[in-house]
Image (cartoon, rainbow, N blue to C red; front, side, top):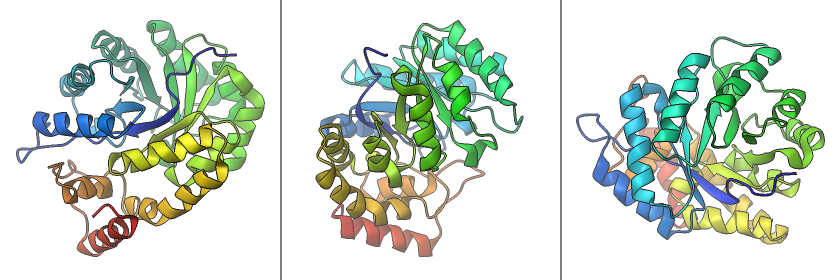
Amino acid sequence: MRTKSIFTGSCCAMITPFDKSGNPDWNSLDKIVDFLIDNNTDAICVCGTTGEASTMDDKEHLDVIEYVVKRVNGRVPVIAGAGSNDTRHGINLAKEAENRGADSLLLVTPYYNKATQTGLIKHYSAIADSVSIPIIVYNVPGRTGVNVLPKTLSVLADHPNIAAVKEASGNMAQVVEVMRDCGDRIDIYSGCDEINVPIMSIGGKGAISVLANIAPNETHQMLSFALNGNYPAAAAMQTKALKLINALFCEVNPIPVKEAMNILGFDAGIPRLPLCEMADSNREILKNAMKEFGLI
């Protein structure tokens, strides 16, 4: 049984704002970090999927991690995305992210290679052996093409540095199996905003949330209700947020959430190619959902 979780509640899967030249916008990063913490975000995940780490070179990736760590200044835990489909590269990124001050690492399942379950165990174990900070396994088969099965997580849960899983398979039955097979040996975080509360209801510790970029206080409150056992209140907030959540995923993440941040005045810029600006028709869907939710 783990005595301490990396975080409980709402961790924002934070965007990386880009300026007009396409470089990280450090001033906007300052504003976004402070906005999130001022509005009760419980942790920040930097350079994950939503942070567009896949289009950053290593120096840029690590510089953004270090900058966010310094701006946060210990106010909340900082979880750094550091995964790779090359285990050697993943080890190097993990070590450097730890050196830059990250409190924890979010490691995406190796993509494209389509590793076997044995390969996944060896991959995650090798990276976990190389660092001293806790690791969150990021299971997102819709993006990576491979699913970390519950029995695989049960093996990984015995590693002292593998503390949690971000479950973004969208398969509640699988999440239940993870809870059954792993119990208290590993924490489960929701990686799908539309089922945050259902995952919490079976023992999840929180969510690594895209919604939290634009509604940090509401996401924190929803998950706090769940953590405190007030599931009627949590469910009411989950259902109220569903239209907005759907709008945030009407195009591939992070296209809509960056546009939503621009609408809110955060100068998020546009995603890097091969992602692009949001279609006008979907922008209207997003704006209407934001208005209905009360954000604008």
